[in-house]
Length: 400
Image (cartoon, rainbow, N blue to C red):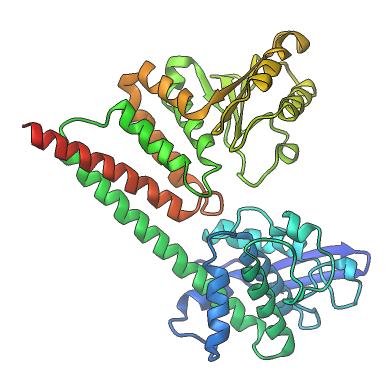
């Protein structure tokens, strides 16, 4: 593995003084990847580390753990349970700074299956500014994993285990998780390819609608409507003369990114946004529409239309309210559309492009970070697609 030309240097000026952290990221990761045995003898601690590293419900907790471990390893005077400078204990540190500088490099360079963005900006950690305790952890979910992560830090602080060993074991578990996810996904893709090659006809538009509908109805699927709309434009951009801007992180709010919506559409060759899509995994409210009007009113240029895509039922009063925005915004059309209904209409209108759509959906799904779309949810798509292809093959065989 290629080494950095020099050790990673982290230098920030704070009111309490200067914090300097120096160490070699490559060396840490190499030690973790080369460790075929558990270097921590206490199996209870190893079990805690694995539970935090493998938690699929919240990929931000392990990122917090890494930041605190890095701080303790780099400077033994730091208290691993005090990642907030507001504590002002003389042993506290900025976990967020370490997270955004050093853990960020770990994520980008090694593709570790952790959140793409800092965990310290999530509500549970952002609203917490006191010493971490497993008896009263930040109010987040799953609470047991929060407790386990903090328990690990408490064990490090008590001297029962050293920070470097826990850091190595955590990265090793993340590497194993990444390999498992990649293997499962590869197996699923191979099975699908075999089924596709054996079928003499492709899936129908309704088959594809059923696959996407079941996928979107799964737990933790709030990102999938964004993927579906983006796949439509990636399929039709040459025909429509329109394309989408790169998708923002799933965890990033529009207020942080400055975007008008989850999917932003421009004319090909232009940077001017003409259409914005906002996805809702809940009912659209009048407040949602008001917020959208506020966003476009402060935009650099006027857009043509703003489309809400929802997976829930649409209230007539709210729908009528959205239509009334055309006059109030002097020509920006607002509309609320049902996600599956929108997809069904598109697939039947452009029936001969249905296979391309499904391929683009698959591409976008696989390109999303595991922190945005759970690997289990990615694998579920291939299960659903495989079931549809198998049913089609059996039907064709029975007819012939």
